Image (cartoon, rainbow, N blue to C red; front, side, top):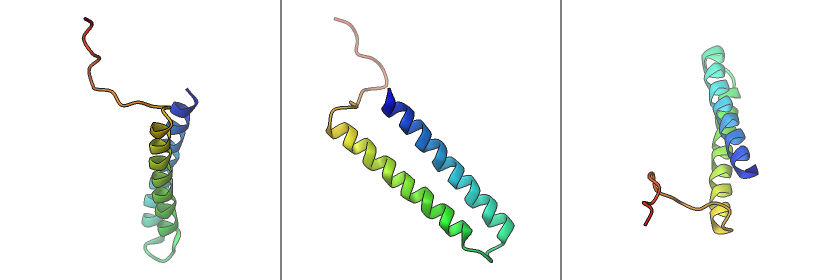
Amino acid sequence: MFLKIAVVVVLLVILFSLGSGLVFLVQDKGRSHRTVKALTVRIALSLGLFILLMLAYAFGLIAPHGVLPPAPH
């Protein structure tokens, strides 16, 4: 359960960073490096989330599944 909450929180922070990058892009009109910093944070968070998910899979904390549940026998 903790892993699911952590993934959702990181996704929300990634979206916030993406939105702040857009705001900085519109407000600064290329005169500041805030857009680059916000997007760099977004990339770092996305990479960190990817690594977290790969480690969770390697340690057996998460398992892949299909879209539909298996049919009962």
